[in-house]
Image (cartoon, rainbow, N blue to C red):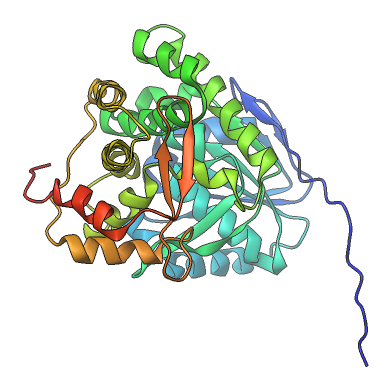
Length: 351
């Protein structure tokens, strides 16, 4: 006997992304703000002044990618239980990409899922990590291999939070902006070449274009079954770099910048990109003092790490490669020898 459970339904997970000064946020129930000591010290009072809620609790976690672990998630969940949050409660992820990933993941787990909103405070999280509903943590096998798709109820992007951002963090965010321009928007890339994001209102315009670009991709492919994988340009290589260096040497955006250079080299090798366009990307990244090289110690070990990438399946490694400027190719048909030849160019280089 076979019984059918019919669960077909349309779920509207749409949400607004506000770019501008933080507005008043009203919540009827309890609110848990997940943040780290650094962000709390700089900006927590600004958030609290804009927040109207029945009860507000602050949950702090250590600052850094190395703390994006199950142990930290357990800490967040324990504090949520301590404060007796329920399914009508709200979690606010207030910080950079690490906080957004962990806060969203904790919200997806607590009572089988509660609402959360993203208030990103770094450039990288404002242009990329806060939009799209990807949440998760790292483990010894790689980056973001444990997680869930859990869309926020809203995203509030306040550029004023970026005034306290160190230059390295700013550059890391620029890498994600460049990533989206290279793969999806050639006119935007040309605009980035001609304008400095540290001057005037250029950054606000770049925020808008980057979020618009990512939103369009997420709308077309929420669960990364196809097109959305293209947003991982630079990440396939970058995640291996982060794992090899125990998430302590490079910021995420810095690893992505190096990963883009590696992906571009591979794209040139297989005829998808010209050396001239690859140089244009390097020149733009270098303008923001991003690292462009990584000394690969063991090509075979680096290559084998690709198989733990979420986009890869069985014996096929999926690579996201630029097709010139403004186009992208998702392929799993590149020969191992070709990939290793590209990797060998980075052995012995000094980052």
